[in-house]
Length: 345
Ligand code: GLV
Image 1 (cartoon, rainbow, N blue to C red):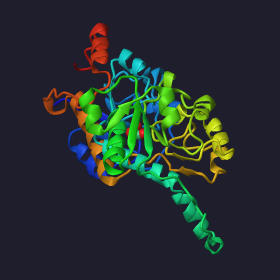
Image 2 (cartoon, rainbow, N blue to C red; image 1 turned 120 degrees about the vertical axis):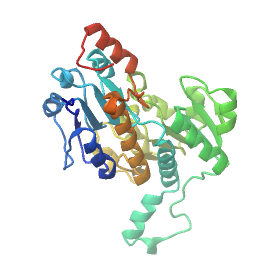
Image 3 (tube, helix red, strand yellow; image 1 turned 180 degrees about the horizontal axis):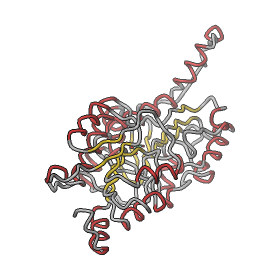
Image 4 (cartoon, rainbow, N blue to C red; image 1 turned 90 degrees about the vertical axis):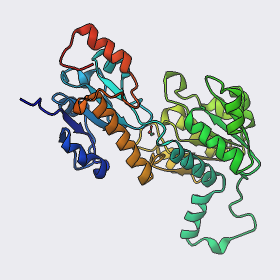
């Protein structure tokens, strides 16, 4: 008798053209409406499936997988995975994956778009025009900061940081400084056109500072009131990483008091909620976590998540390597240690 097909849950409507063909290989349970899953609902959904494709809005930890005895893989659609408790998943023998690379350039584009919109007051200008204020125009209307020839700072120099550096150095003739846990090899610094700086120098010298570092306990509120106080009052701050990296109340205060000129945020501490203190400001550009939101990139992300999932479930007998597993070694070691034969190696 043929083995039953693995059962797979997809937590949100994604890209049908990529998801629907999976029905040929797995028993697919899709979600037709955008859903804010509670912790308990997630646990119930994960309890009787072999694999799941989820988004950054689903937080999965020990409690959600405690009863998920069949679950072998969680394929996260997103490069960041602070929504997953990777240690708990590994301990339960569950492999997790993410979607790096395919979104690098699109996300770097958005970072640059936010930088330009904030520095050149694009959305503020548009609101002013729509409100019928053009009649009040003066020579000093909407004066912003130059991008070309200025100093671009990048905090976090992974793939997306490097994409932003290239845009700044090679497209806009900017001097590019970066700070990162580890320094890039000299040849890579030369290729992206960036120079390493210590954290304080980066803060002090950047005309525009873009945050692209992963969110961890050590990056929580790394941009706080003290860090903001070290920045130029004419500077622009852009966050396309995770909301928790910035102390949003300190940022709102700096923007309201003229301590900082402008900001662009794509990510928020309590998203989808946005603090009223931020919403009240005119010198901030706010987008709803759309860094990777081009159709081509979203398709590629879902495809990569599906490829990870099928490889992990060993669908069609091909024990393929997952293209982007996060914790394969640790999860497989836990399976071996527990002697769990129901989950394949
Ligand atoms: C988006 O924020 C992602 O991590 O992919």
